[in-house]
Amino acid sequence: MDHLKRHTVEKLHECSNYDKFFAYNNDLQTHLKKHTGKKIYKCSQCDKAFSNNTNLQKHLRTHTGEKPYQCSQCDKAFTQKSALIRHQCTHTGEKQYQCNQCDKAFIQKSTLISHHGTHTREKTYQCSQCCMVFSYKGALLNHQRTHTNEKPYQCIQCEKAFSQKNILIKHMRTHTGEKPYQCSQCDKAFSQNSGLKDHLWTHTMERPYKCSHCDKGFTNNSNLTRHLMAHANEKPYQCSQCDMAFSHNTNLIIHMRTHTGEEPFKCRHCDKVFSQKGNLRSHLRTHTGEKPYQCSQCDKAFSHNNNLKNHLRIHTGEKPYQCSQCDKAFIDNSNFIKHKRTHTLEKPYQCSQCDQSFSNKNAHIKHQWAHSEPHTGENSYQCKLKNHKRSYNIYTDNLSEPEVEVNEDQMDYDKSDMDNLFEPKIEVKEEQFI
Image (cartoon, rainbow, N blue to C red; front, side):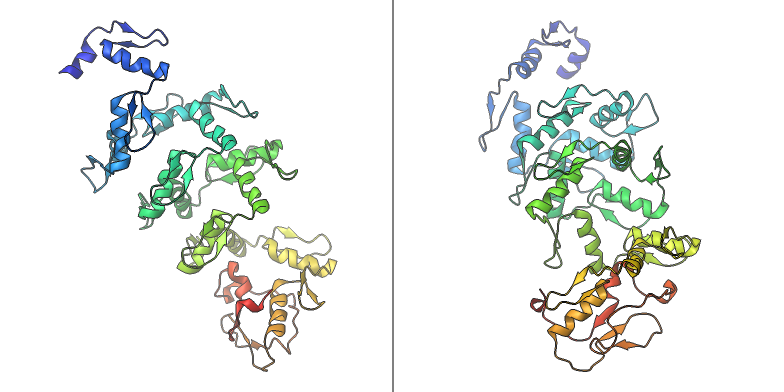
């Protein structure tokens, strides 16, 4: 009944700093604390303080682990009622926040507010340390942490900290193994919505975001926006260590790792580490054997989208890579690069133990074995082509690879594994390589 009065009673108590009115003076006083900055409610577990008791109680649950709001349709529970309401929408599919300028709808009001900025293009929040402007305050606050390096969101299970709360939530799933985003067309599930979106396009192959300057299409709007900057030659993100500049902050972060040597993405199956998450994702498929990219023309599947694109050209007959010095054309860029070396005589692969150099990587690898192993005379490499019985002796056979055209239908391998086309039958310790 007390709550209903707040809707029916005349609101006479006005905030002098804002155009809000309140039914009760207590509500006004609670609101005014937002303007004064007073935070009288102290947490007994840490140094945080809050302007009202409700927010303190919510915060205390981060220490106690209490999750009083239980979903009635699954076993998930939440610390806040608002989080439960948002979660329930994933069961019902309800998106109550409708954009009044297009047909898009959203589960959360904050997402709708952010979306409105795509229509108005109004960016009123200016960063005081660089030229970037933003359409809403939250985006500005997140951006400012790239200058201050502030990371207020601490993981309770490891020492990692993050600049944004949503990144912490995603990180926590690496500990819990939670994968809340389920594909409606197969049994795969993902820890992030972006992963599900990327996966769904393997079913549809749809690229709805089209560039107005060229014929390229993209699976999401952020990739299109980055691409458009390449046309405009906009590169607002400058490297502090060299003269490189980038059109997107993500590319700058990745580039900085070439200076720091940082490789933060570790494989959970082996000791390999990577500087980019995409490279780790590709590497993991060598352990799982997953090939999510299915050809629509035949039954072949691939672990990488680029390999699928190259394969589709076998069906279409397209050879976009044309040599300018002869009439040869190629399906993929890697074979085109190898071919160009037959004209330039370039040999970029240099042996570290002698003065020999090679035009391709496979010949270089086979030559390295000659330094590391005694000459046994055995055929050390077995070809993996179907119905192809020949083995190669790395000590007597010609180390250079002739330029031959092989029908891909004969191959039982993914092109990403080209470097492993020849498998050694002998065991060599990795320490023998430089």
